[in-house]
Each structure stands twice: as C-alpha cells, then as structure tokens.
Length: 331
Image (cartoon, rainbow, N blue to C red; front, side, top):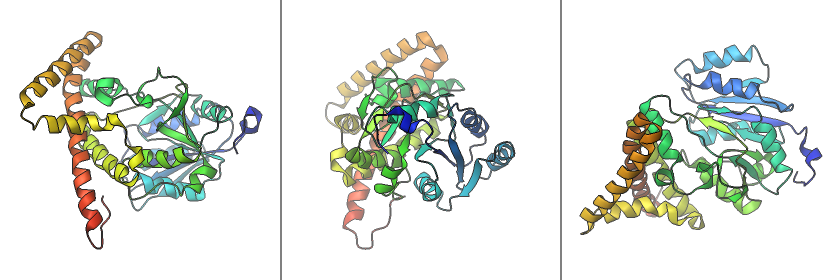
C-alpha cells in the first residue's frame, strides 16, 4: 500500500465511516459535505447508528435515495469504537476515513488525505480540529479549544503547525491494511479510542499531520455538556496511559498537577495566578468576540478541572479494578 508514487493512490477506493447517535442537528450538513467531495473513488459511505431516537436516520434515509453509496449499519454497543469496528469488518476501500457526525469536511478533504499518503510513510493521516461555535457558549468553547491555554500544545489543535509525525490527529484517514493489522479500535475505550489507536498505529508506521486536511467541528453548546465531555476525556486518557505508559506526555499532567496544587498549602497563590492567567487571556479573546470572550472565561476552567479530575479519577478506578478478581470493563 505505501508508496512514494502519487499515481498509485490516485484512484484508490475510500470507505467513509460516520458513527452516529442522535446527530440530527448536524448530520445533513455532514453527509452533504461527504457527497460534495472532489475525490472520485469514494466507494461507500457507512453510517453506523448506535440507536438514534431523533431524526438522524430519517435524514440519512432521505439522502440515501439521492446517493446509493450511503449504507446504514447498526451498532448495538452504541460506543464509537464498536461502531468503527462494525464498519471496518465490511469496508471495501483501501483507505478508511473516519468522519464525526458533528463535523463538515472541506471539498478536498479526502483527496488531500489520499495525496498525503503518497508523500509519506504513515498508517494514518489527518489534520487540525477547527471548532466553530453557534451560540455564545459554543463560540467561547471553540476559542478555548483553539487556545494553547485551553487545549495544550497538541499539533491537531494548531492549524498553523507544519506537516510531520505526531501523536494523534483529528478524526483521521487510515491505511486499512494497517488498521486491520493492529486489530482496529479497542472497544474497552468508549472515549479516547482515537488516541489509544493512534498510539498503536504510531508504533507501526506513524501518524502524519497535514494542516491542509481541513474540516469544521461543531463543539458542545452548553457548559454542562462540555464538562461531561472533558471529564470523560480525562478519565479514559488515564486508562490509555495505564495501558500504554509510553503514551504519556508532560502536557497531559498539567491539569492534574493544577488540581493537586490547589489542594496544597500554597493553593491561594496558585488560584490567584491561575485566575489572573485565564482572566487576562479572556480579555484578549474578548477583543475578537465580546460574547465569545465571556464563554472562553468559563470554558477554560471547565475543561481543565473536568479533564484533571477525570484523569485522577481514572487512575484510581483503573488501578483498583486491575487488582480485583473478575475485573469489569470501565464504561
């Protein structure tokens, strides 16, 4: 599959996989962006549904009448890892493009990804996450996700970063042979399944970041949803670290260390320094968007504290479960 000759990849078949669960707000725009791709060899578009109770499937059925490449599969386990494995089992393409139901692809997303494979030796390629909020909270959340203060220094949060090998990318397009070689997604990870997979693929042929592989991501639109999301991110990042200790990077310790510092004798100084940092950055963001700046002020602490508590909780729970007989899977 791997080659430095771009012609080898020009007409390779691509399977697009969209795991969904109640995505009626965004699924039409998402699917339309797939149908509008300029790549000529998208062989199938697999919508893997985890039991949606809204209008998601009605919208998919409607678009299915327009384009016969759309196929609906069912995911009884509901989690994204199992949805992606359901698709992987039947995928016909040489490449598998994972697309989230709340994102919109640039028209050349697939073609740029396939072309990137022709220029590097990698198991997966992908680009940056580009969050776009719809209300003032969503705009603040989007700002926080783009900010180094909010999300750290990971390349896929920085569209200005140069091409190169990285730990992980947003969504990703995969060499399907390599994806099957490592056994697909680990279904013990209902969250953070992408980072856990990226670590295994990184040990095979690596993950390549190309900022020209572009899409739009619609983030959560409430602070409660954001908090739940980041708590789960932290919780299952801890599980990934315990499974793959070498996957731990210093930036992932920032939020847990902040929480521990706030419980120390110097907590007043730590709190003052943290509040000053977030407040000054929020004022800077408010120049670009006043309402977004307010959302940013709330979003950053929610992301940090929920991720940090989730990570610490995950370390404790996973450590306890690892020594118990008849260990249950952490869900």
